[in-house]
Image 1: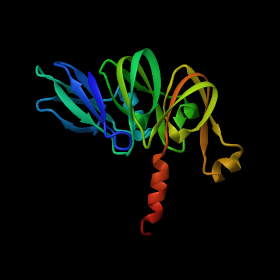
Image 2 (image 1 turned 90 degrees about the vertical axis):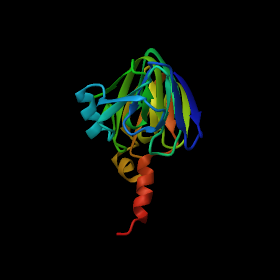
Image 3 (image 1 turned 60 degrees about the vertical axis):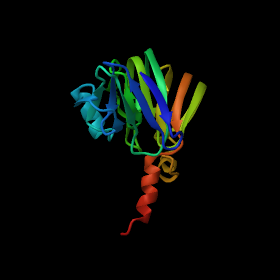
Amino acid sequence: MKYQMKHQPSYTLLHLELAPGEQVRTEAGAMVYMSPHLGIDTRFGSGILSAIARKFLGGESLFMNTFSAGEQGGFIGLATGLVGDVFHYPLKGSALYVQSGSYLASSPQIDVKAQFGGLRMFFGGEGFFLLKVTGMGDLFCTSYGAIIPIDVDGTYTVDTGHIVAFEESLQFNVKRVGGWKSTFLSGEGLVCEFSGKGRLWIQSRVPGGFIGWVSKLLPR
């Protein structure tokens, strides 16, 4: 699978070139254009339980699409509804944790499962639910705003709404900002404290902030 990021960094579109018989799995609704005769198969994403979790806890689509190239190969363009960037991560048997709204596409051999575990797994405040992505192949994640890679060696604290993805070598703990008063009145909400050594990707904006700004302009 050959890939190209077009119109980076604010309005990134992922262009994929598929060899004959090659497939790519995508988030439902991500296709912008595709070559003629590219096959499509729509199914529940990685198990019914996972799909339900993403639909009602992560705010994401209940379905995932698999596009297949015929004997002539093909191409497809992918993007999301938010203004932001895309990054590529080659999975080689390890795992990557991705907040549900940031999954865009992957090789069909990659397994995507929603993770349960209460507050530690559910990034409250922004409605993001963690996905555990494992296997061998190409993974593409998207953001709202710019993507900022951070190499953690020790500890690092991030607002939960700004998290895009992180490597499994990092341990994390979701907690309040200060006391309850600071949590509810500071506008910061919950933060995620990472520890260990590994890479973390964050986004420069959060959808909740934009929604809040737009709602103030709407007539009442």
